[in-house]
Image 1 (cartoon, helix red, strand yellow):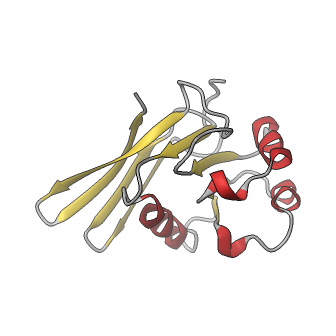
Image 2 (cartoon, rainbow, N blue to C red):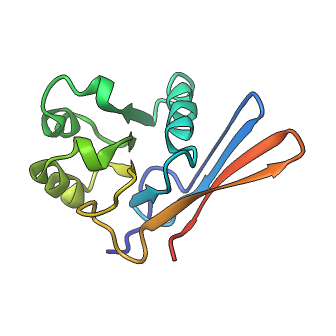
Length: 142
């Protein structure tokens, strides 16, 4: 399921002493990592960027007020970031995302099972400390 990113190929932001620097190679990027790897922190930093970048829409458990599928059908031309996706997404929404030709997805979850994972779109969150700065990147999951 290799498809090129349709909204953005690169995203980066700085938050205090944290840098998020992601390069997307697929339209659906599944980001996983062990507990406390920084996935939710990265989600928060991306969410802050929504006010400056109208191409980003973020969802987590706090936003789950109506059917996720209904919300996604209304959105076009966005990078949609979903935190705790392994918990939030039902089968109908997973199917919709896999067929969506109008949006790009960054799907964050601890357990990638049932989240459209292929060798080409499964990534893990990697952090590297450089002095006082912590840089978050995504790398192919081995």
